Length: 457
Image (cartoon, rainbow, N blue to C red; front, side):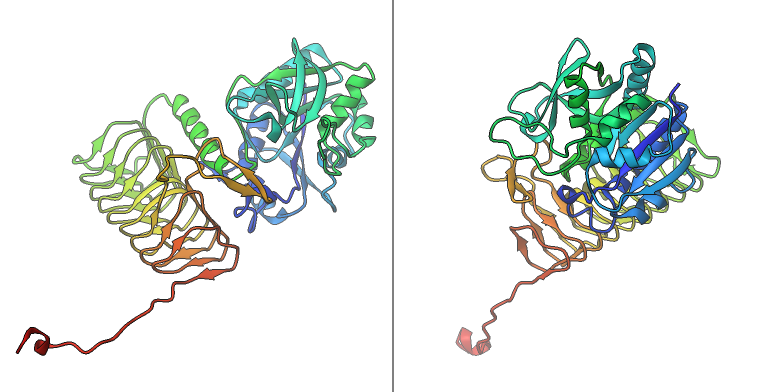
């Protein structure tokens, strides 16, 4: 059986901005667990307990995310971002067994990892790859496999055709490593395509096919999301919370947790030590409430939600379904929040936020996200200068780490605020705000004499 995996976590993640500024995107939390930690633990549960993690940009965040993991972990540093094939080869330098290679920025069902491993161990091809139907996504955005009856016949980057995409999960026999070593650093593309100079694993698979080797493919039986761009965070978070709910078999309430008789509970409760649900709180779905977290005085949780330790929901705040809130946050009177928030987010009162919020963000009172356009269309984004229309959450707002807003700030659909930025009071933010920038409104004031004489006295 495969006992070794290489986790690839060296990329800069520039398409993930603004959440790649203070961390590697593989360390971004989904349902309050870093993506790469979730992968590592799932692999360990499948018996893949030897793990080599290839790091580069944001190495410290990856090491912190994996601290205390169940697997035996070794780190290998990729000095230059030369591509996934080069990273995999670096990780495999001292390995002479079958191995898995897994992109660290994916959120995938454990069943997908098991299905690929089982097919590889049963049929013994030179290599195997996990693939997934495209659905609503465009083939122009992904590395595309051409498959016939579970066997790979070709690869094309950003193809005009194809009905599947690679998922970033592969299995290799040791004899496959020379194909990684001899990768030409140019993935095959269609006429008119312009590939970057990058050694992609999928091109090594193409080389195997060209030389008559058998490469198996496995359609992912469970959910799978690639954390490539910011809107994928919301998609991955919802998929994971639904999977967590499907695995529940009842309430799990710590003996020190408290639930008030006046609370309205309509879902299953997973309450950590010292967690509390107070009077008039409304819980309309399954709720994971971390240690010391509280839902008090009429807080409303509209559906399944994950709330981190010591976070407080109170005074008739409204938390949307499939929301994930980090640790030590405050959501207070009249605040409405739906989406993903990391640790120490303050949404004290009279806010309306839908989207993704980084660490230690402070919302001024009455900050509002305009998430619906007058034409009811999705917002066109620019990712590295290229126009794209997200398949989900195009009109959500995306707040980078350590940013803040002033009172009455309005964030227009699909806008991003960079890390360490400030959107000042009364600003209507129509364009993305760069990192380390502050935008303010200059008010024109007119002062005139006025008094009772104006009324004829």
